[in-house]
Image 1: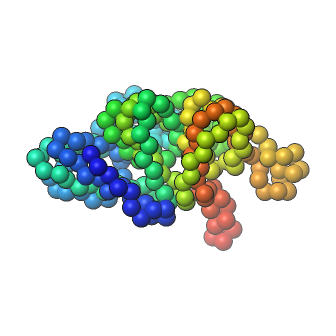
Image 2: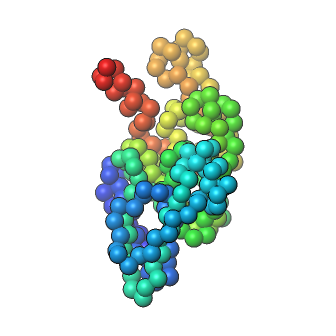
Image 3: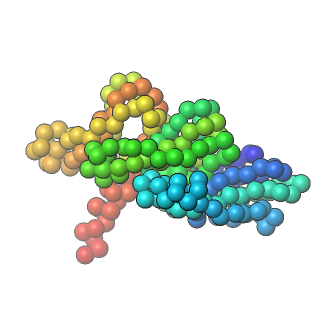
Length: 220
């Protein structure tokens, strides 16, 4: 399988070339266009009960679509996300990543999707009790609202809530006030993620929650 991510960073889309026998699994609604000879099969995400867990606890859809090339010629497929922004593809090579709700787009064979406990502090900050966890040796594609950047941390690193997209599971996440009560309120920062550990994280340059807060007074 070959792929190219075009229209980065604002309107990114994944242009996939499926060779004979290749397949890729994507979130429901991710397909933009495809050759008519591609076989598409809709199924529960990892089975019925696993799909329910991912939907209600991982923030993903109940169903996924599997796209396969059963012909003897290369076929083309285009996938994207619902929000405007950047997309990246990461080859797992045996490691794992935890995603914020809505970040996952698609994955190649060899990738396992599950749900990981995030904790009550994550829920209190509006990030949810559970995270979608991907592992294995395949390639996973995910996106964000705005630009995506990768950073390796070693120790403590602070991220404003709503800007953390993905992180390796060995990194501990602790929700705290940006400063004291007065400072957090007057600065407009509120809660932040205090990350501790060693590993890779992915950040988005914009926050959908921030956009909603900006637009809400203008729509009254």
